[in-house]
Image 1 (cartoon, rainbow, N blue to C red):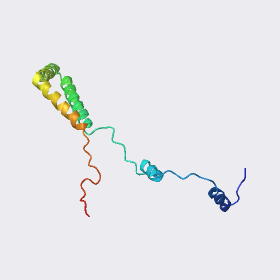
Image 2 (image 1 turned 90 degrees about the vertical axis):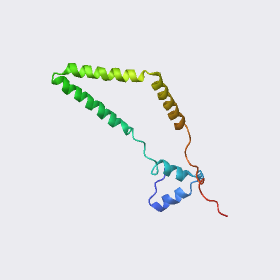
Image 3 (image 1 turned 180 degrees about the horizontal axis):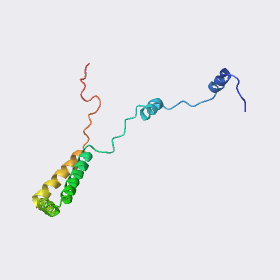
Image 4 (image 1 turned 30 degrees about the horizontal axis):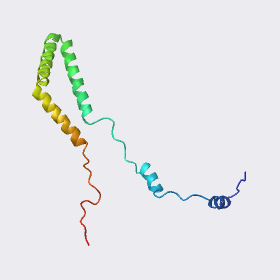
Length: 125
């Protein structure tokens, strides 16, 4: 192994190496995957904190009513609301429209709505 005393000898040895030509676009690929990399999408969607907050609020409200001793009224009111929700969602027309909305959502989400580059440019001669 040969040790170099100064940088000039080292640079001469490095430039004397027989290296392959890098592939086309290597620099752009490295930059796009490092410093120009798009940040990852947030793991929490915008509606999730609102849903969790509403559930926690309902549970705290129910807990306060139970602590005050009015548990029977709160439980019967919650059961009544649950029965109303179940009766609403067990109707066939409601289920049909939920299915139609879900199918439309899936169909629209599968569409490619991106605009091709140069599509809206005016062609001048």
